[in-house]
Image (cartoon, rainbow, N blue to C red; front, top):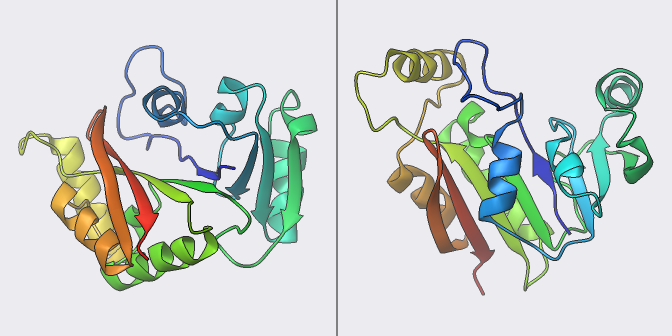
Length: 197
């Protein structure tokens, strides 16, 4: 099973040609494959994975008021038959063999990020996997958009963009082992993490 948090690219940054809001999802799907048939999706999600993988069933977990807006105004009617809306207050869905979190940690200071990853790990079965996609510090230190994004995140949330080493350290502090880590493009990295025994 799979869960997805897919955020649209901030309006201040331009997307690569041909990419739509939520563009990391199709890229992630091509870089990481799963035999998952069901997905549990936190409310901060969009539906590119559902469209990209027609056989995927999705459970979307959120507060009831959020689910009403998502079901009535945000979700594409084409994917609604494959989406189950589940009222839930806890931010990490349970019952998923694989959990995909995309750009969730950038909004969280280190201690909150560690707790979020630890709760995600606790929700996984022993043989489960946590797939984490995060924007990391830009390779080009003169990329003004990346610098401004980092400053906004730091000022608003105390987080900022992290290096690959920093995100890996957060995962390890949360009790997760890194199975693999690879570039998925445009300053984004994908980690496949597993709970440590």
